[in-house]
Image 1 (cartoon, rainbow, N blue to C red):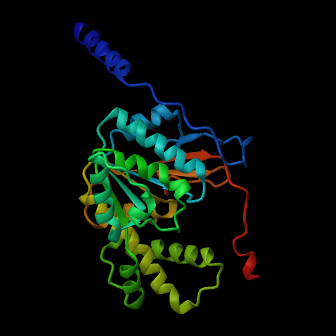
Image 2: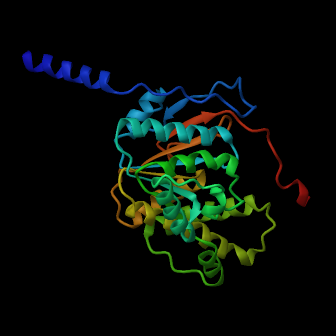
Image 3: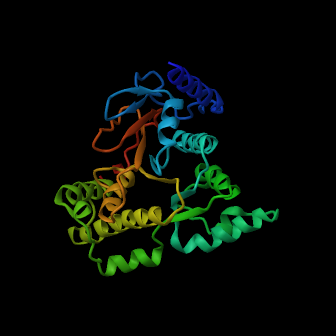
Length: 294
């Protein structure tokens, strides 16, 4: 009886010692404010609905956390920054990896981080990082600023342009059974065709698929090198368990302890095959990116 009572008291003390979470950011995107799924966090294995604090508690025990975003949704970037801060408050963060940083930028990232550590001021941070205009700084700047200010490393997770062009010229052999299965490559090809409005010549599809999968392989390799616990921020397709980085981690022999959270706009369902958790956010107005080609 005394042992049971002591265990309960220790559990209560541990719960009380956890720092309170900061408020979840308010929605910025205009659509779906009345949707029943807005703000819902779901454990996709069990169907259980979680609070933000319950999600943080679960992710805090994972050595690797992969967070998938829709690149142009400001709510996803705000939630990523909130989640990173919440996890840092629960346990030491080992590293942060970004799809938006290419391998060739790592020296600039390390140099800027050292300058900031020494108290130096950097007038034009995007220029110092050789930041790509393809990733809007207004969306990504806050998470980059945060990562640079921390003691843990900020790592580039993507291929650089020279590597991508080399893959276009000659597709390398991708090793591993999980990532090379037809059930993986065929949906990826379909997604590539759709995202390019079915305007890509068929002859280019093998090269495009190779680039997509070599990006995923690089992210997996960087995760395996990164200090733990590690967090990767990338597009939702890259982190999907059925198509992306988790398959490459498996092919590289990593233990199956990675947790995947996908941030998804309401009306865009996520399944248990794709992720461990989904957090449904407000949506941007629908846009037909292929209208110009019709």
